[in-house]
Amino acid sequence: MTAIEAGARRGTVRRLAGALHRRPRLRLTLLLTAPLLWLAVLYLGSLAVLFVSAFWTTNSFTSQVVKVWSTDNFHQLLTTPVYRQVILRSVGVALAVTVVCALIAFPLAFYTARVARPRWRPLLVVAILTPLWASYLVKVYAWRLILSEGGLADWMLKPFGAAGPGYGLPATVLTLTYLWLPYMILPIHTALEQLPANLLDASADLGARSWRTFRSVVLPMVLPSVAAGSIFTFSLSLGDYITVQIVGGKTQLIGNVVYSNIELNLPMAAALGTVPVVVIVIYLLAMRRTGALSSL
Image (tube, rainbow, N blue to C red):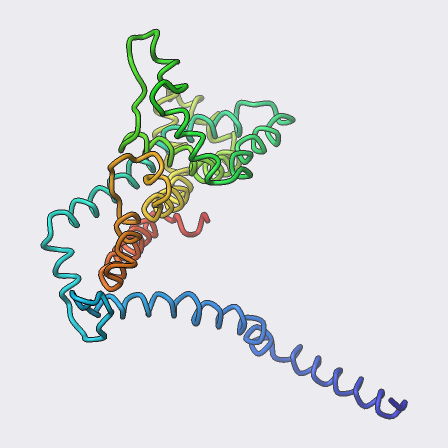
């Protein structure tokens, strides 16, 4: 490459850089084009294919997918008692996990953010995050051993004349709570850490007791973070199917029914797969009113 060609190339690069500098919107568009294409094609495109295939049918003799438009799958979801029970049970499990996580996370986050010594707080946050570093399956199978007959739960409760919950719906809620609890603790910890101490002092100076301070000062300011954490716990619990398959016994949730229908009736599995998407969208719209999305 000659010096003239190199100079011309450098001049082209400078003119292009100058054009981008003068046009921030064009620069932003170029930066966002690739991730937006990924979102539109891979994520939204896959959801569109899922929704479209839910309107297809299956040949009852060959089990082959027939690309004929029909609402039979959705009609079956709404009219078949088994499917209604599975959907309601799945939503109930997700709500139960969210409530239990919130009840456990709040005192833990309050201790790590307001009570513990400042030098210990980073270590406590690391301890909260430590379970996330372990494999998902390892944690679930560990709970399977704990909840098994004659396992750790039975051994600990035997002196009190009780036994562990075994496998079933309570075991599913317990295991999912353990899996997703850090996602609830961290937003609440951050909100409590940013809570001005003078507000608590002012509430005490005005004669408010601890419960009144919590209800009137702390809770309204932390509630968006609780709602933000609930988005993770609710959506992750609603879409989970491995945990209930390992510790749920005979319990069936949406994920299990979708998995069992993939080979036999793909359109019905797609119709079932749209249910969590719709439920989560409704949940996000409800949480948006609390300011949770701005706390993520």
